Length: 362
Ligand SMILES: C[S@@+](CC[C@H](N)C(=O)[O-])C[C@H]1O[C@@H](n2cnc3c(N)ncnc32)[C@H](O)[C@@H]1O
Image (cartoon, rainbow, N blue to C red; front, side, top):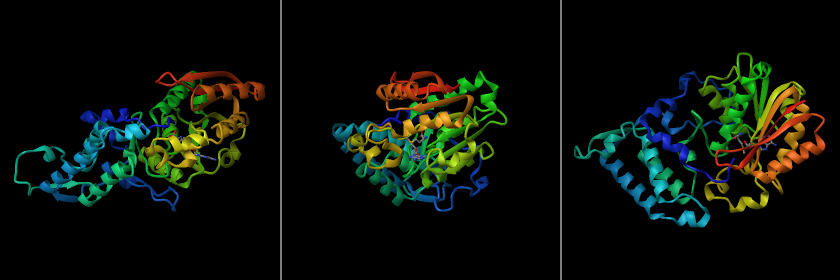
């Protein structure tokens, strides 16, 4: 996970042909309640029924207000912590309207006297409240609308769960590449440790063949609940099992049996957390970000985990903070795990940053 929240994945939202992809494969009525009872996953705005109605003139008034507060930000957030500028915020406002208003064209129509009713997925008071949170509290846009586009998925997210980042998508491609060359890997059991929203588990679940399975685990009950909700939305309950607990602890029964192990663990050095963009540092869960003094705590632990959990020929892929951590991880494996882990490679992300360490169990 990168430390900033980029917005380029949203550009696809503007393309109306993309809208259908946003619908989950399972209808909301089919969703069972296998998520932990203690946490209720939030339904993203675009999936809510349009049960609210407001006067067009009131919606236009809200829109003008929202646009003016977004415009007033200028480059203030950019200067303070490399946050979003007005242009990005105004673009988010358009996406927000697409999610909330059933017929967004009505908002921009010059016809009528303003007394027409517009159907919406949230009431007008909630719109004021959510947009204030976006601007005044720097609540990430993805938490405002309750979802993030990741690969061709639209994943539900909420406070307490890391928003999946575009660079992490590459792990699914690396797994896809590995399983395409090896049927044993394709039919085997994989683990996604620290699954968050379930992004990697779902992405990998879809590239495995019949018989292939993913165990997705997380320490955070909110993450487990949200991941379970996303798994249900994509009808992958038979392929992906959720477990709650710390790293290897909930997978004791799988020692030496896993075909693959992936993780995008917390890897930001503790001292860097306070300098993060407010959207990240103030709102995303610290347990998803903080990797200890040098950011390596979880990565080193997982490296030992790959040795313990993978069967011969098993594949692993870890995301890191960048080149320095990649090198440290490879050095650690070569010095301490060379009897079991081999074919180590450092892979760059789309931006050319050395981001992933992959390899196999002998
Ligand atoms: C950087 S986030 C990655 C989330 C998700 N895999 C993704 O790529 O979007 C790290 C995840 O590890 C989880 N985590 C942190 N400490 C953990 C632990 N001791 N055991 C299991 N999961 C943990 C966090 O709750 C968080 O969901």
